[in-house]
Structures are given as C-alpha cells and as structure tokens.
Amino acid sequence: HTARPVALRAAAISFRGNPFLAPADECFTYEPDALLVMESGRITAFGPHDRLRPTLPEGMEVRAFPDSILCAGFIDTHVHYPQTEMVGSFAGDLLEWLETATFPTEQKFADPVHAARIAKLFLRELLKAGTTTAMVYCTVHPQSVEAFFAESARFDTLMIAGKVLMDRHAPPTLLDKSVTESIDQSEALIARWHGKGRQLYAVTPRFAGSCTEAQLEAAGHLLDRHEGLFLQTHLAESLREVDWIEGLFPQRADYLDIYAHAGLVRPRAVFGHGVHLRERHFCACHETGAALAHCPTSNLFLGSGLFRLFEAMEPRRPVRVGLGTDIGAGTSFSPLATMGGAYKVAALSGHKLDALRAFYLATLGSAHALHLDHRLGQLAPGYDADVCVLDLKATDLLALRTGRSDDIADQLFALMTLGDDRAITATYVAGRCVYDRSRAGNPFRA
Ligand code: GUN
Ligand code: ZN
Image 1 (tube, rainbow, N blue to C red):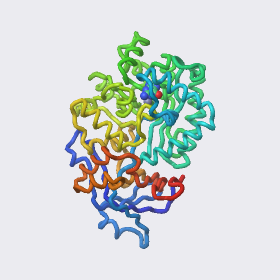
Image 2 (image 1 turned 180 degrees about the horizontal axis):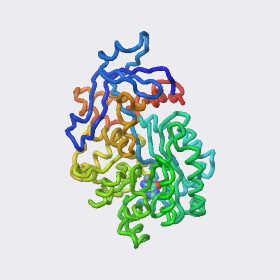
Image 3 (image 1 turned 90 degrees about the vertical axis):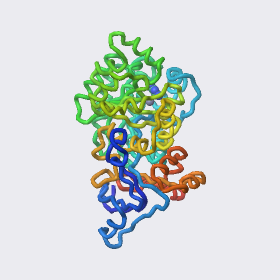
Image 4 (image 1 turned 180 degrees about the vertical axis):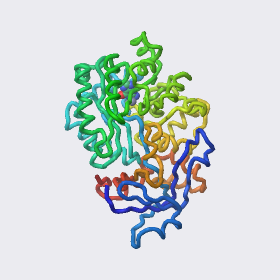
C-alpha cells in the first residue's frame, strides 16, 4: 500500500451490528454525503463530508462519486478458484457434477502455467465484483496454492486459501499420495504464505467424502500447531451426499460429528453450505465459534436444498454465517447477485431477506464468520481500507428503478436484485484503487 492519503466522497453505508439480532437502525450508519479517508492501508477518517472536509490537508485531492454508494469491500467466504472456467457446467446432482465436471477441470492444475493463468483471471473477477477478501479452495496441487497467493500478493488483497486435502474417492491423479505428504506440503505452504503480508492459510480437507479419517485427524493436528490458521470444508450440502458420507463413517453420530471428532469444529472453521442441518448442529456451531458459508446460487444450481438462514441466525443461539459464491457450482462472482440468490432461497423457505440484512451478510457478517470483524467489514477508522463503490445508475433499468426513491434500503434492494459486476465502479484494496471501470485499456492496477 502507498503512504499517500486518498479521500473519497459519496453516499456510504456501513454496519456496526447484526440486524438479525437487533433493530436494523441500531446496526448501520447511512451517510448521504460521506467523506472516507484512507492512508497506509487503513481507514483514517469516515463521516459527514461537511464535518470532515476542513480537517483534510490543504490541497488534498478528493475523488467524488455521484449517484454512488461506498461500502466495505465484499467478502466471499466460500469459493473455488480452479473452477472459474467451468461455471455453468451442465451435470446431475452434486456428486455427479463433482465426477463429470469438477475433477477433470481440477486435474489441469498440475500445470503451474495453467494455475497462474486462472489465478490471474479469478482475482480480476473478484475485484470487478467488488470482492476484496475471499476464502478460497485451491486444488490438491501445491503449485495451485503458490500461483494463487502470488497473484493475491500482487494486489495486496487479504485472501485466505489452502491446498485441498483428498486421499480417496477421486481420480488417482487428484489424490494425495499419503497423509504425511499432504500435511508436509501444507506445512511448507503455511511457512511460505501464512501471515506473509495479508495472506492467510486455510487447512482445506475437501469434505469427509474425499478424506480418510486419518487425513481429517492430521488436519486437526495441523491446526493446533500454528497460530491463526483457518479451516474450510464442505458440510451437509445435498441429501444424497449426507447419506453417502454418514454411511462412510458409521461410528460417528452424523456428518458434523465426523469433523468434530477430528477437532475441526472450532473458531475460524468455515463449513460450506450446511443446508441439511438440525437444531443441535446450529447449537454446536454457535458454541464453538465455527461458521457456515451460505452459498445460495450454488444450492439453487445443483438443486441441493434451501439453507435455513433465519433458523441459523436465531437470536438465542446465533450461528456465524457468511455469504459464499461457491464458484463453479455457484453461478455468479457477484456478491450482489449472491444476495439476490439468498433473498430467493429465504423466500422459498417462508422468510423475507431485506437488503440491510443481506448487505450485512456480505460485509460485516462474513467478517464475523471469519473472526476478522475487528479489521474487515466496516467503514470505520482503524479498519483495513478495502472498499467498493456501487453505482446506482449502472444500467438503464437500475437508473430507472433507483431514481424512484431516496430510501437507502430500497436502493440497496434494487442493487441486490438487478445488480452484478456492472454495478461496481471501483474497488479499493488497502487504500489503493486496484480496479476502476473507467480506466481505458486495463481497469486493473496491481
Ligand atoms: N463438495 C466437495 N467438493 C465440492 C466442490 O468442489 N463444490 C461443491 N459445491 N461441493 C463440494
Ligand atoms: Zn464448495
């Protein structure tokens, strides 16, 4: 990041509380004419333009965005970068889709040149969509992790990623040769990347269907050996998957118990999907600080089921829930489109997901799911300066729709219903403009 301060002027929205647990107006700040000042990678000031403007150094440039809303950079808590090229692959249910579409695609990441090419495309899709932090699955190949972190380090994005662990039920070329080798490879990547700049490592057993019990237990021990590691895996995504996996582990009470037994249900653990969970599972997540990644467009695409968001967020034992695109089973990189998907999934389960709750999920809620809410997810002094600029007039239809009222909740709802990467004007990472739609030629700047 640069030391030079940057100031932005636009309307702004930021959350400080969870609107699933408290009245919405206590949970967010809306500033119709805000000034946001960033320096050395952090937000140094945020508030009404008229109050803050006189405090700026003489002659400092202020970039104004009319018809726009500043928002904390979006956080995607579940996404597979190697699946970028296979979004929208026609297949059967989850297990068939894995076999026919996913595994052949991931085999290509044995080639580091391919990995570097896709990592580059993937990171640009995130920035275009307004996403500044993501929790990312690589493949089983260590070089896929190397390629991803190298690309993220160029932009100084805060990314959490790891080598997939899998030692059964996949084509032989995609399997770890031994538990020991897979853990040694993970250790080497942790030494190279965990805590280097803004990069963080996630131990990544793909799911209980592709890991032996020995590998899951080794993953648990690996988590104990290093400070601040994350854990990501899949949980209770489809009914057929749940049946199959519970059959593989007859000695365990249920799917979540397989992970609990291996010591994986803990703070900074993020379980993808959690569609088919019961009350006792929500209680276990609440008590342990483990999180669920809600991936609505993926669940709709694969027909996996309807995530019970409002049950998960039940105020007497709220679960940490983040939003995930789950590219390539998910169908959009855009957190706006993902919020729109979450609205539809909730509606099909008899609930209405309003825009304030949806935007909370994509920002501070996801930061909370990752236990990073002390530095990500808010526009506030001291927070990391990761910001996206939303364009209320991005399309003719959005201009028509958002022009009807000044109500922020209504405008945000229009954005999550109609918006996608076209609605992102610019993305700032660690205080620097890394994506600017209006920059001719190459809108990206590493
Ligand atoms: N379960 C195990 N692997 C995967 C994957 O790559 N995508 C999804 N959606 N579910 C999985
Ligand atoms: Zn996934």
